Every structure is written in C-alpha cells, then in structure tokens.
Image 1 (cartoon, rainbow, N blue to C red):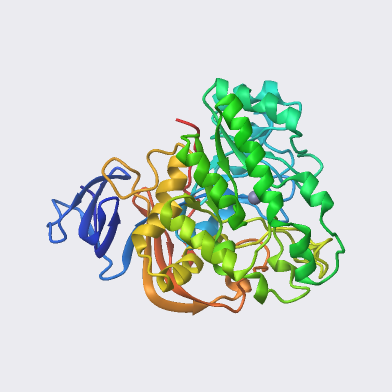
Image 2 (cartoon, helix red, strand yellow):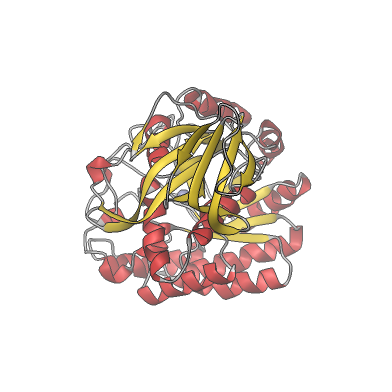
Length: 442
Ligand SMILES: [Zn+2]
C-alpha cells in the first residue's frame, strides 16, 4: 500500500465504524481493522473522529461551459465541488452552447473541460425532438445517458419532447440499453396555472402546481410500460409524485428518482418575496411536502440527492419570479445542507453516502465510484459532523456569489477531499492543479 487512511467513523457499504483504508495506485486496495500497521513506506493520515465518506457523486450539475461560462465554468464549478466533498460530477447537456446533443457538440464540451477540472467529470447527452439519429452515436461516444424535458426547458436551443417525440425517443434509447433522465412537469398543467409574475413567492408556487409533476411522471411511466426504457425522474419536488413512483417500482418498472438539497432543507413558507435566488423549477414547496420527501428517501422511493446546481450571473436574479433565471447555486453546500437536516431527523452518515455517492454513481453507471470498498477509486470526503459554519456567498468557489443558503448556519464542515488518493481540497480550499479526469460510459 502507498497510503493508509484511518478514522473511527469510516462509512462503508457494510456500516460505519473504526477502520483503516489502504490505497494503492489511486484505488482502494482493502478496508482493514483500525489498528492495522502501515506496510513498508506507506504514509498514514489519521482523521480521528471525523467521518470518512466516499467522495460524493453529483449527477446533476449545469456547468454551462462553453457558451455561458460567465454563469459558471469547469474550473469554478469543479473547485466548488472539490471544496464541498464532491469528487465526481456529471454535467447536464443544456445551458452550455452548444448543448450536448451531437457527438461533435460532446467533443466541444470535452475540449472545454480537458485539463481544467479539479474533480472527475462525466457528461449527459440531450434527447430533443429531431435528434434521434444522434443518440446511439452519443451513447457509443461515452455519454452516461440522455436528458429530456416534458415541458419548456427555459432555453430555446433545448426544446422539450411532446408526447409523440417521447414515443420516438424512448424506444430508441431502450434499443441500445440506454438511460433516459427526465425533467417531468406537464406543459398543459403549467399553461393552465395562474402566471401573474412579480415578487410574491406564493404566486410563483401557484404557477408550478403539484399536479404538473404528478401528471408528467404518470405519462412518463406510461411510456416506460410501452417501450421498456430505463428512466430516472430528475429533481422530484412534489410529494404527489411519490405514490406514483412507489407503484411503478412495486410493479417492477425500471424507474429511479432523485430529489435535491433545496427541496429537503428549504421551505416555501420561509422564502422572502422578491428573493429569486430561491427560484427553481419545479419549485421549493411547503414544509409538509418536505417531510414527505424525507420519508420517501427513508423508504427508498427516492434514490439520490443531487444538487441541480444551476447558476447564473447575479443580474439575472431580478426580483420578479416570472422573469428571473430559475436555478439554485449550491454545489459546494449540498453535503452540509443535507446533513444539517438529516441529523435532526435521525439519519446517519451511512444514509448520506447512499443518497449522495453510492446511488448516483450506480445511476450513471460509474462502477469505480461511490463507495469505500476494494477496487473503487480512492475518492473521499472527510466531514467534521458536529462543527458548524455560516454560509457567506462570496466565500464559495462557484463563479457568481449567489446562493439561496446565504446567512444560514449549517452543520458539517468538509475538512478535506481526496481524488484517487490525492488531497484535492483542504479546509474549503481547492489545492494544486486540476487533476480531474473526463469520464466516459464504461
Ligand atoms: Zn437541472
């Protein structure tokens, strides 16, 4: 072994407890008893009672680079990720220009990322009306799956799938064993909701009703029944979706789902009017709804917790919920935000690892990521679980100092982050040159 990492709280798939993790060649060689002596010239790092988690895998990040890199970029996003305990992120296919909808566009995105990333980065492709012929080539070129919208995406270069388009895309993706990840809000329900605009959060919430999510997931699952496509429901916000998802799982349909830190930690009741840093679609909902999302994580109806980090420049967050750009910036804060609420609800670090590392890695087919187990990459986050800090937007590493968490005091300080056995961030500061790699489907 080259490196031996010790902690009294190592989180493995078998549980949390004292252990020593032996690392060789950037991979985990073995998980050993705590007191195992280092062999030969191995270096020892002892984290004491800090929690040794697998490096987090965030499968929902909008890096926006190239094309809208003033909103975010590969260097800034991956520095924020490293500081926040994330060792792998997967970039969404939209908001960059070009969007990742052809192999040539994928090559363009990879060129923008190469040599500039502090964590490992994979790519989702996009499935649009009319690019069906690009999907298999993108799959073969290494994208991890395909994102689609069932309602307008917010950018004109990424149109949504009408029901007929979904019936063209779904069998195509099923045909090569691919994965379809879906923004599920029903366009008819959205169009039928009141859209007054303005600064009132209650008006915005009414414009994105619960039933828009429920109806879209219901029609998506009908397409799964017709075509057998493996699907993943992105950013579940409404608890009304949960019985639909649970029923589909009970029926054996190949469906998984995620929610996001902001849906688990923030509530509609506390969003100040005009505070569009809280705007996202689907929206942050009521406190009772939040409780139901936590229950669904506990029972396994929801699998993953990922950021949906979707930043923009500060000037686009005008105090009008109809006109402001929708998206919450939280890449660096997901771990402490979720932990703050999780610990209050009786969850342990093993739950965090499952929701924020193991399940997202499995979703994206990244089989060397997401767990502290022999053969996996030596990717880790070291968390001081009882320490607190107060969020200052300007102290975060993502590109623009806007976040819905500003001023909040959170539990859980990320002490250090490790990628393939190398420390890449220390006490919130990303270190060294960018040593992340670009990942492709295995
Ligand atoms: Zn998103």
